[in-house]
Length: 186
Image (cartoon, rainbow, N blue to C red; front, side, top):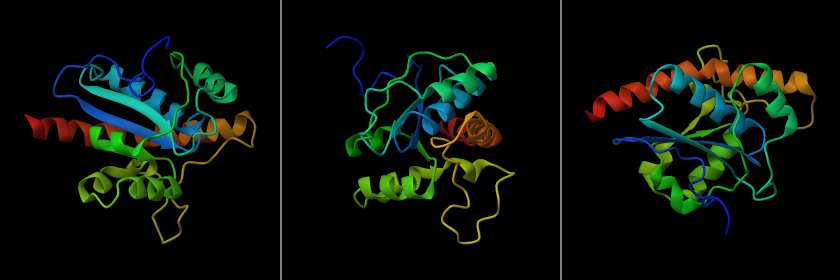
């Protein structure tokens, strides 16, 4: 097999104690890689890239091996994000325990991830919605999609701009959460 192992390809070399984050959408070609790149950029800006590893996956294998959607890539590049090669992959139940925070793009993704946790309460507690860290997100009123990151797949570049804005809006809350977790480990 050429190239890195598909289960670990997204992890940079990090210093211990590493904090590991996984972003998750359906096919791992639009929302979760966009969130991954947004989070990685902010971690670099704050000097945390050697302490925090970020990966992305999908709940479906339908796009496995495919690159990031060209529209997602274009919007990220247009907004100044450094892009490296990305190949979609499906999340596996056995890897969930390796992550400190699993950020689902939608309530449906979170539900699937919790099912993969097979009743392990500690793993289930690590699953959070990306937009739950967004101070501008709507207050949850019981609707399943209240905190969902919009799916741009069927849209145009404007839809990908919306997705990017939703990713950017939550990133500072996520980083604050991670900084607190890292401080607690000292």
